[in-house]
Image (cartoon, rainbow, N blue to C red):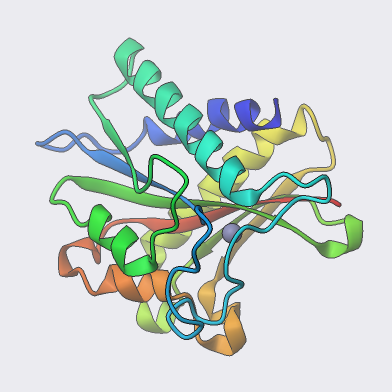
Length: 212
Ligand SMILES: [Zn+2]
């Protein structure tokens, strides 16, 4: 149920995406997947290979895919009822692990309106809880201001949805990938930046942090 609550609030944000001449497409990237390690340690910027689990054994890759599928249906249903025309494209539809270059290539479309990669994290010694947006660091992100505003509203909306089930949940705001991997950043943002026409497209990692 926690996931469903996210979706309702998330929609409130998404339907505000400006109407464009062509139907905008929201790219949703369900993090992880499959059993293979996608890319070398360097290519995935030293991040853990795959398939993190909750303490109860639920795989992050399954949560991200299930969440993304539900999110797509809710967005499309909401758009049918009252919103602008919108498309939704998932970077993966099944249990496979694409590398960051492959995920970025799927997002490379002239009608891409925004890119959101979904992850679930745990941490904080059992105390941290809430929603966090991760964006590309200012020094290498020409779209920093827009990404920051997008991520801030996204984290706030997600945490509001979770609060009715977990009152301690709150927005953890926005951090940049400059905090990751000793300042190396996330290779996903580097791969997206290789596609020139995506440089002005809002792009975030959205992470839900649940206590252990
Ligand atoms: Zn993850």
